[in-house]
Amino acid sequence: MWYNIRIMNIEVQNNNIILSDVRDFDLRHIFDCGQCFRFNAIGDGAYTGVAFDRPLTISQTGDTVTLYETSERDFYDVWYDYFDFGNDYSLIKKRLSHGNAGNADNVMRQAVSYGGGIRILNQNLWEMIISFIISASNNIPRIKGIIERLCAAFGEKREYMGSIYYTFPDAERMSSLTEDDLSVIRAGFRDKYILDAVNKFTSGELSVQYLNGLDTSEAKKALMSVKGIGNKVSDCILLFGMKRTDSFPIDVWIKRIMEYCYFDGEPQTIDTVSKTASKKFGELGGYAQQYLFFYAREQRIGLD
Image (cartoon, rainbow, N blue to C red; front, side, top):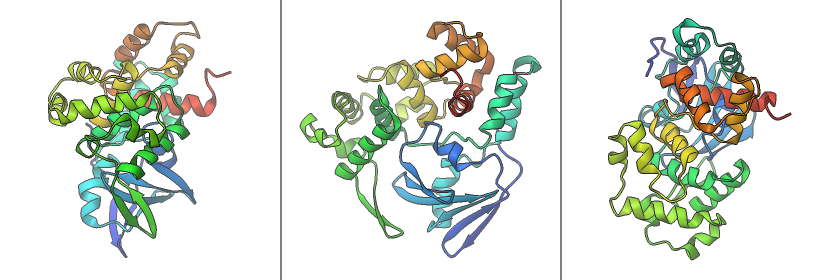
């Protein structure tokens, strides 16, 4: 991790946390790049959602970011790490733009410039496991709907700024559920995959501590022991739930982007794309994937 020696200004005012001189940070880039399903835009540059059992409304105007109705303790205990404020993204973007051995990567240079406010959120591992099981063969609006129904049915109620929110249910809370119980979330065939993950975590076959103690390849193998977790889903969980930034999730969309940007549009196998990404980006692969995804989607690269 590359820690930022330039410290932003932090002020507590009327139970709000106000951050000024915030660099390499854009809420739309962060929440609209496919890594998070529980925050939604509410207008005027603000988003609201829930993470680690805490609801939050956050807004941004220029380089000033405001976290509303948030204690200073919660900011340092939860949100500072969640938004990865200690990581120097200017250095990450510089390294990606220059490429390996100092060879300029013009594709990444454009991508990091276009999505320069992206940060990889440090999210709850259990939530990422279930969320990305739900994400398989699905679209973002439907994924969000299923997750919100899951939380409303089985999470805990929280009141915040005059609205009701629900926490993400942990494995223990879901341990007694059946496929019939899960029918209310309307996840279809994914119900049995969710329950398999619940069973593996409540039985002790898998645990957060165990997974965090494995190297990336072994953690990937362990995650794929859960039904419904394949190559791409496991890489998403590794990246967004375990900060394994050497992971480069590849689906049809990312494969097409890589072919367009690095292979002159010529079709490649997933294995070839994966090896190319590993060679080009190394430990920065996860950051590269997010910049490429956002840039290509916004510019419709590989779609037309």
